[in-house]
Amino acid sequence: MKIKLDWRSYFEGFCELHGKPVDYKGRLLFPDGWTYSRTEHQGPEYPPPTDKRHLQELKRDYWQARMDKSELDLKDAERLLGTLTGQQQMRSAPLKTGVRVFDEESGRYRRGVSDVSLPSLREEVESMREEVQECQRQLKTVGRSIPAKSC
Image (cartoon, rainbow, N blue to C red; front, side, top):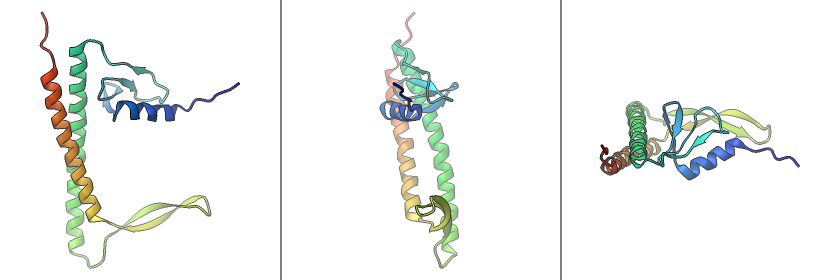
């Protein structure tokens, strides 16, 4: 009997179970303290530390890294939205963007064209703002739960 394991699918399942990862000291760090190989879907994976203080510090580092990235992404998205909004105001027709479209008949991708949807971009920027706010809330919560160092 042969079974070929699908490690990419395993990793996707791991992410569904443990949350969205961030890069951390050469590994992927998850909100619950698990870490995973940054380069291989097969792993290895490492359980959270058993020391409560170390685990809480890891969680704080996770939320800080996620917030830092979220804030950068938000600034980029706000800048893009501002640029596109300004460009659209000077145009009578909707701005266009190139997209890849899968052609089922040929089984290939082809270039397509789509209108730039400023309302959709605004919704995405708002979602990114909410992500930053969630990171800030989590950082406050985790920061309060780090136990004092024992002597």
